[in-house]
Image (cartoon, rainbow, N blue to C red; front, side):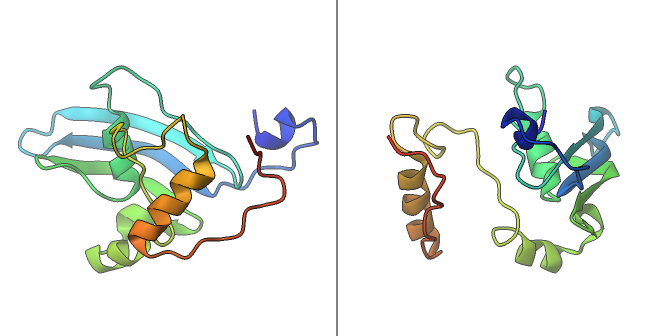
Length: 145
């Protein structure tokens, strides 16, 4: 269900901001699949949470969305479209420019993730100060506690 549908608004046909099709990651030395046939789309304004048991491939999928595979693994197939760019077809320099500016990864490590006891705005400001990104004005619809 889209954000618009949850808010009771009529949903327009979704154009994916991110479109993942048949993503496959395998062990480089043997070709043994680690993840296979992962497909999903995320429309502008939508949020996707990936939930699963430890070792189920959540981080592997997340890293593959950035065109990265952990040591010993390789992205063996599929496509990851960010707008009209196929992340998996980009060279290392293009990926480096893209990461952190257009797309980022929030790790599942509790010490480096969002703290539920603090507002997300506070966590974002703290993170942006670390990375040197200037603070954007909060949106009028942002919830306050």
